[in-house]
Image (cartoon, rainbow, N blue to C red):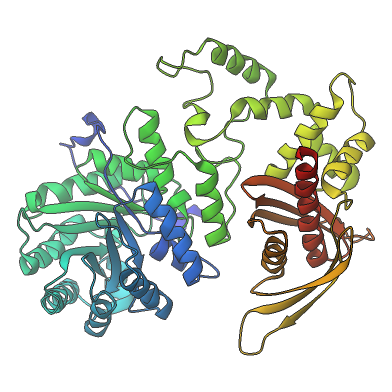
Amino acid sequence: MFDHRKYKPNKGIKKTDRKWPANSIEQAPAWCAVDLRDGNQALIEPMNVAQKQKLWTLLIDMGFKEIEVGFPSASQTDFDFVRWLIKENQIPQDVTIQVLVQARDELIERTFEALKGVKQAVVHVYNSTSPVQREKVFELDKQGIINIATRGAQKVLSESKRYPSTQWTFQYSPESFSSTETDFAIDVCNSVIDVWQPTSDKKIIINLPATVECAGPNVFADQVETFCEHIKQRENIIISIHTHNDRGCAVAAAELAILAGADRIEGTLLGNGERTGNMDIITMAMNLYSQGIDPKLNLSDAKRITRTVEECTNIPTHARHPWMGDLVYTAFSGSHQDAIKKCLALQDENSTWEVAYLPIDPKDIGRDYQSVIRVNSQSGKGGVAYILESEFNIQLPRWMQIQVSQKVQQESEGKGEVSANEIYQIFKVHFLSSNGPISLLDYDIQAKQDSQSKVMHLHLKDEHKTFTLHHQSEGAIDGLTKALGEYLNVSMDVTQYNESSLGFHSDANALASIEININNQTIYGCAIEKDSLKASLLAIMNATNTYLSKQTIAA
């Protein structure tokens, strides 16, 4: 039964002297990306080592100086990844890795084993402090919870002394801080501070998590400000914030927490995380950027950021995601388009940005608004994508819709209205055509025993002969791409892939769309077949033939 009476309001703490409403954010906080730990544990299929390595590279390239890399005492994959980072010298001199561990002796010992040999690291220890956790999970009173925290802090301190060559930073979280009585959270943290004894040149981090967002961001700001006012040795402590998005206010809560005195923000790229997600660092950083504040992160390549996160998490980016979504800088309204065009025509590149409906210049993050307008305006009522879907049941991903629309525009200029069949023929000629110098005759895939990899036998034909290629890979798409790349002596990498069904009443049920990078050229291909695997392979072949045809024309 949908009954609001089963819940009680969280009215927060009584605070009449709040200072944060009068403050403003003047500079970016210290950022700590937790994609590789908190974001990873929220995935249906956690990242493998290769995916973690790819996401790590992105985080480094974006300029993160603190990165939480895992929970090495709880996962062998995390342990191995931490060891890889250290043994293979993957950690830049100015980057500090962070690891999470519960306040339990054996787990803390295992954590320090994983970190052996690291130059600098943050050891983040935590235990739950909220009334519901105390009473229903641990069945302990307040002193019992404090004892867990102090024992954990003492163990972290003693273990750190076994590795004196490492520069250690200690971090403690009263987990579920947002649901904990603020005065008790202060008591617990003060007990940990008494153990660690921070100084001005050896500060500690106290992390205040909204493990579950249970009230408005103003309530959280009051809690943070009260904490900052009453915690011991505030000058020797870095106050960190870790918000979740249960109420959809994680970014707002983090921004208000900075106004309330916090110094550091933990979050993930695009907000991936448990339940409704973590604090989205991209959104908060871009919010600062749009206000003329240097976010201290490189956010200039939106395409790479979104695609890497999607590839590593298997979670698509919503088209309307703040700042980064594919449709964020697209106006379907004619009046909006007109206003934007007029403002862009008057915008001086050396002047402050002032364009209707566009809070930033899309080019700053690698987007092109004007090309999207052209596609939209040329698609007419319903759009090219709508016609293909409604008339032919062809559902294309957004990035493929743009490519098809551009071809329709190129071939229909001066013709006026374009019929549905004409649109389909343009799509067929440029993306479905199998004509080309090389073709796939047949293929065979054999799984290797005791391994996730597969051996592909590819039977192909070119203008002169038939031949067979063999390649071992974890997937058919990767196998064909690598085999073709070696045969043609080119670099080939599938950068986007999508498949959809054409419906059960069609002789060919599967549509595959491919975006592939061949020798630094972005090429697109599609295929329609009875099964998705064959459609995927033929889409690669079609894209390859498009590339080869372009080379022939250029020659």
